[in-house]
Length: 91
Image (cartoon, rainbow, N blue to C red; front, side, top):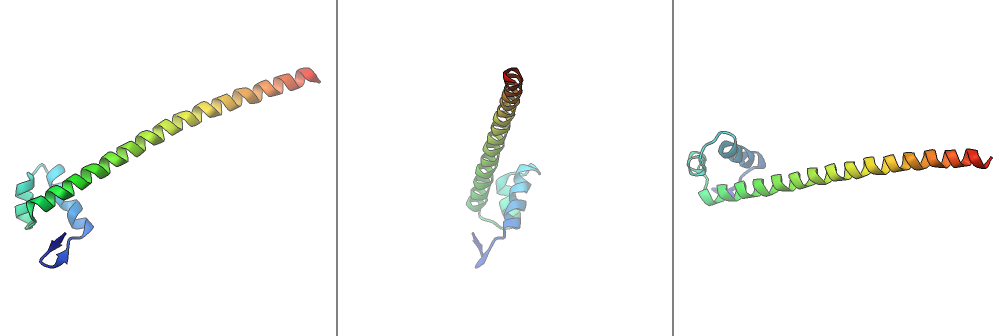
């Protein structure tokens, strides 16, 4: 978004979102304090929410994959032991 012909930096957007989410200020108050259009601030808030939900989905997927990896490693270890056991019997 532009402000007087200049683009807002990513850091400025993050700080504005943090004022609303972490400092507990209302969006209209923050928009007025920073001289930002309220709709622009709401767009930044929406974008931040979608990014954080995307991160949560990635963390859930990582957790799921780690669990599957542990299961596969356990099965592999069991098969290794079974192979060694049956190899001894055949000798």
